[in-house]
Image 1 (cartoon, one colour):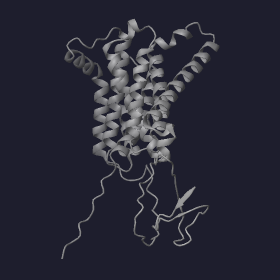
Image 2 (cartoon, one colour; image 1 turned 60 degrees about the vertical axis):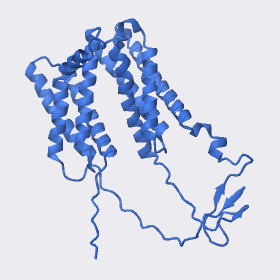
Image 3 (cartoon, helix red, strand yellow; image 1 turned 30 degrees about the vertical axis):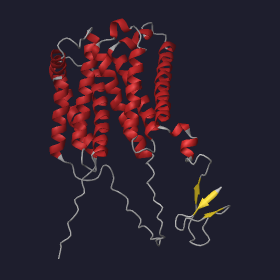
Image 4 (tube, one colour; image 1 turned 90 degrees about the vertical axis):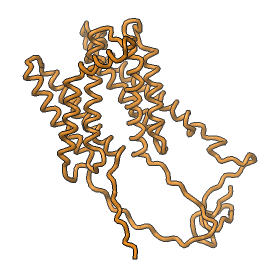
Length: 333
């Protein structure tokens, strides 16, 4: 086992610190092929292996939670329990389970990697393709909207999961071993950053985010009709239930985009997203109450999903587009 000093590049056996420089030695693997240990072994650290493991985890978590919920419904003895997954709320609940599995699988695939978002997005694309291929009763539900919509929607959740994995398990910095020894300078302790809920609220961004979220919710049917007309018959909707599901997905995407717009380039993106969620919830509930066709479960579901998606979008926008630091230019003499 060869231990190499990062300063003088001398190798030692059975030592931890360099006797000359006094710094900690680094293990350097040497083999007959001259390749690094990551190239000889550790197949699970390769990109495709991480994507495969993340995909298996996402699929396993989704089907495990689905069977667990199905068993809980069958225990209740309700005769309509086996058909609950064919309703609108059942399909939305299954979409939530798939999103949860993708968040965990994408986080595992992107953990400790600088391309974690790309790894998570690839996991989401393949998970969407598999979901379309194994979908039961594909003759009635498999349309062009489902074929293109599922992979794109799940790609977004997988990318968010990859970003979560990058933020929790940050990639290791790239270390360079200089040929000339340099004196070690202790790095100053970094101050703790402010809280995610601290800082002023950018009300202009919040109002713009609320406008985007509410506009996407109100005109979701109009947006769907425009997309169908622009496709010139290539995209079709086969049932009223599928139209409702696609409309809910358009609304969710609008809320996510609006809250991400409010949290972008802000240190308190989570707080910005919360403000967007509260504002959009009040407006949407007011519109539903004004129409007179809203039930209690619909209002509760609207409030819960709007707040949850807004928090996720605000945090995602602030993490994807961090605050811009303006550096002062030094005056030249």
